[in-house]
Structures are given as C-alpha cells and as structure tokens.
Amino acid sequence: MHPDIHLALHHARAAELRAETGARPAPRNHDLRTRLGWTLVAVGLKLATPPGPAATAH
Image 1 (cartoon, rainbow, N blue to C red):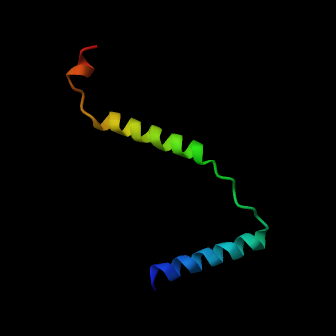
Image 2 (tube, rainbow, N blue to C red):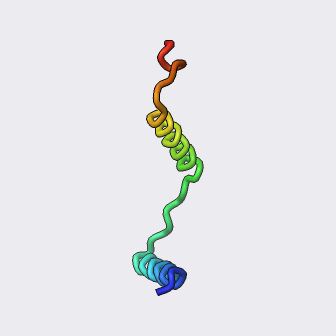
C-alpha cells in the first residue's frame, strides 16, 4: 500500500473515532513544546561534548 494512501486512511479512521466519542482535539501549546525541545537539545549537547580545558579550569 502506498504511504500516502495509508496515511489518508489513518486520518479518516481517526476522524471517525473522534466523531464517535464526541471528543475535541487537544489544544496544542507549540511554545512549550519548542522550548522543551531546545532545552533537551542543549542538555544532550552538553552531555555529548567531552570536557575541554575551559571546563576543567574552574
């Protein structure tokens, strides 16, 4: 099955299920997700970077 067709069927089925339950889509907070994502990137970079002379001078 072509990926686009599979995705379209998934979206259609998800819409049917939401309609059956009467559920509303959850509100999205993109600002919080973006800040959290960049914080995780910064932490990952700090963990992946070996300590250099500047880090050991303190």
